[in-house]
Image: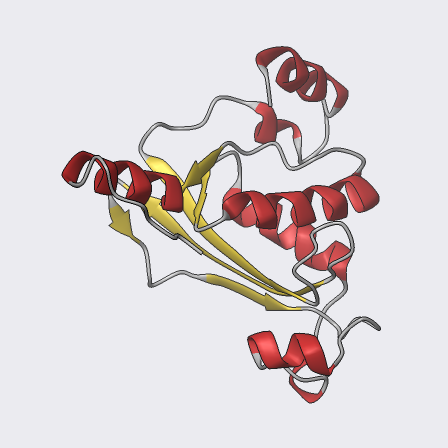
Length: 164
């Protein structure tokens, strides 16, 4: 999110619990994030679970993780169950997507999000945030696969790496 868009949303969310999401984050804090979904297509996938862990001063804070299971969406079928092994029965006590998004935003705040193929998760979370709160997820991204690729290229400049 560019600085102008961030300033717009900071102003637009004034007086709401979401205004802090559009401020500059602490440079030593991140959140590792992963979503399980019903599809590999981020334009149609529904969220099944969200898990996140804070990283503060290069320490992974495993003592206070975030994890929610959502109510089973209608799109949860046998193909998606084969991917993430989460069944309808596993989600019988799940919460609504809106509740999950609100809880997630409270947990992550304005921290950058770290993940492997994090743009996929961001696109799905953007859709959910826009749907329920009217704005996209504002957090910056740190793509682990790109960092890994860059490190490999330093070691083996002419190598080819399949990061899927």
